Image 1 (cartoon, rainbow, N blue to C red):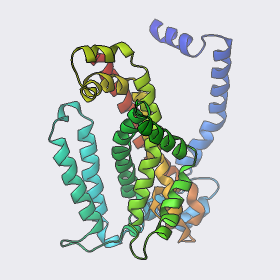
Image 2: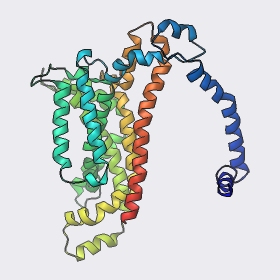
Image 3: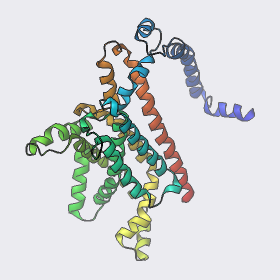
Image 4: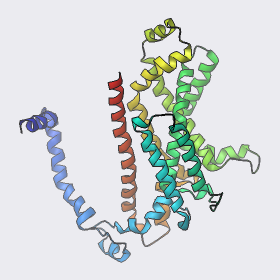
Length: 348
């Protein structure tokens, strides 16, 4: 009991400012939390009954819209009869992502496993070899969100390391190219990058020779986030004392051996929180691909509700649903970041 009281005093009433904020938050919770529970639970409609939802409109939530439209929200415009394919592909990808986060699975088998899973993923999503071909512009929902964020992270992170090292290079040409790339990309918003990749780039290509829009979007996301991650990695590299590199030189290590064995492990350990923060931003910013007609979660929600006038008034419930999905994935990445930090601290 004494420990509990000391925790409350230390965290909630440490001084008059902290105590004031605590009291204000408690009053706000007393005023609004009961109303929220009344709307979200006690007065809500859980059946997929549009008449009951219309009757309860304004007094309670209509969670029945999720039950009615969840397949269109989660899988987008993917053909209804073939939706088992993106479901299976997403489960395989998430299972390998989970395995890749467990330390005892960090072995060489992960490389061929990732190659195999990506081959199966695109085979299931795109079809061919016994499956009905599905064009990439019909891919959408959660599978598209997870695919885009995973590929962007997997490609942008190693590229960012090379660019960060290039910006610190003693060779003027490499340093200039890396600096121009970083400053140019960071000087424009992601929307403009996606717009140029989707609409402007094909204008410079021969008719019928432009790459698939999905590939162009992946390249745009990768180049954009690699520039931001490069500055984070560069900050970690600059935090390593010069004496460490001099010690590596005295041991006869080459430049790349020193980077691999001495500098990069320490630099990346320092910037784990910032890197994971950018990974979370990448996952959330996949919602911007809607502007180039790739309908991930938010785009699929708009399609699901705008196409049906009966369920259109219940967009708030739909946004709460996809916000919950985003929160689950982002919270998992955040907690994993804390675990990685503890592991790094223990190893050091």
